[in-house]
Image (cartoon, rainbow, N blue to C red; front, side):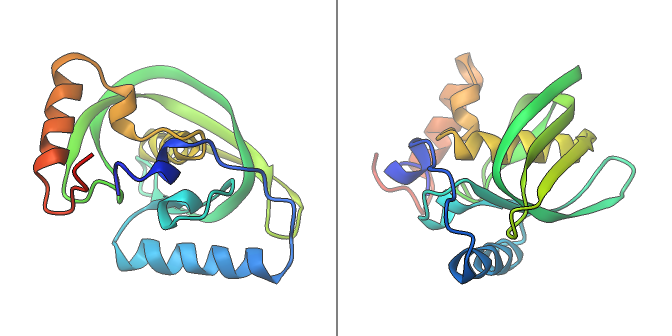
Length: 164
């Protein structure tokens, strides 16, 4: 949850592509589906590694399903759109966030094969959001002014708040 140090620390690269990585990816998908999310980064379940999973539609309702290991957000461009954004680490909360309408993330699969994921609309938002997690950022870190103050106030009052 918000306030846990693992969410605010950049994640380490994956170096072991063995069975533990495959198990982590399975755990990420199971956790994401149980929480009814569309993306989940490893640090959100307490594992400080550069891995995220997604099962997210774009604005044309095309489903994007997969994972990235050691991803880098290589493109975030196009028009900037403000839209509602939530996070499984801040359950029940949402804020109007500005994100680019196009994003590309590059990394590898659990087997080490190169992977390039391109997204637009809502899926581009997801790629940017999950990439932020791996850098130790949660969406309120990208807010400013009254939007940031309102999001942090709501987080402090949430039933899951840790008091930090």
